[in-house]
Length: 286
Image (cartoon, rainbow, N blue to C red; front, side, top):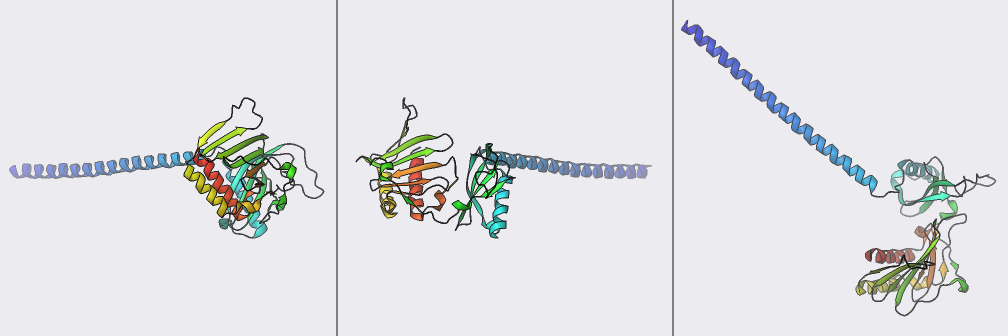
């Protein structure tokens, strides 16, 4: 009887021990699964948030179907691999006709306004400008605008802006665009950057910002090194048929140069560098 009881207890203890071990393994496995699941959920939420943030960085982001359509068309035309191309600029546009303002010979264009995009593509050596509709189902290459360099024309003396005052280092006048407004921004020697809207009777849009005198002097030296004066009284016009572009008139103590936002990427390199330096000054003052 004692032997039977001993065997019974031994057998029960073994069963209990086995059950406890199995329960422990299942608990660990379950806990591990829960931890992994929680980690995966956290990662998923983080990635999703990052994507949302990326999409919301620029409210007027170029739709992917439009970008793909432009790159496919340029690859077909030029035989350049898509990975060698980069969209370097884009802007929303409202074209004045169904031909996206780029009619083919003898083509009849509907006279309806067409919302869309102006897209600039580059391979690092050459730029191409495209007009598209809103979805990318219609894309047209602006062949007249796709010259590696633009031929400037002389600005008539009667159309030149007034010369700068002694305390003014630089001036930008921007005009046109969809809104059709004109703004003037001047940089003074003391670092003040003053922006006004021409025709604003109440002067309600005036802003005054400031950069350091050292930055002003650096900008002046850069203008000298980039030989800004060699572009004196030259205009780089927009391609024929372009619309809603913004014209920029830049004036230093040495002279005036004019260009537009559509063809600015095809300006001479030195002039592009001067424009970039000026834009950096404006950004620093914000």
